[in-house]
Image 1 (cartoon, rainbow, N blue to C red):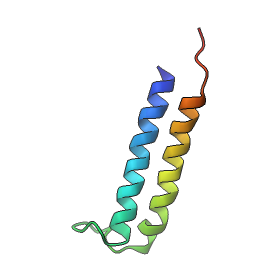
Image 2: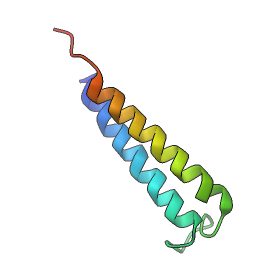
Image 3: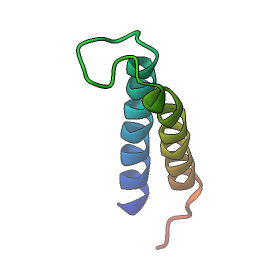
Image 4: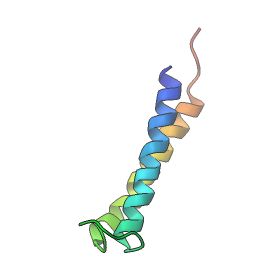
Amino acid sequence: MVRSLLIGVGLLVAVAGVVFTLQGVGDIGGSVMTGSTFWAVAGPIIALAGLGMAAFGLRRKTVR
């Protein structure tokens, strides 16, 4: 259960990071994050953290 939770949350965090990046560079409008350099830089870092979490979940061995 922990493994699937890590994978699911990691993927959600990665998608959020991509959305933050797109808002930061101005591709997605309608938010205070639009056009903000902070989110253009923080978004990819957040996405990589999410991918790392999902990868950790995929590599985690199941205990029986």
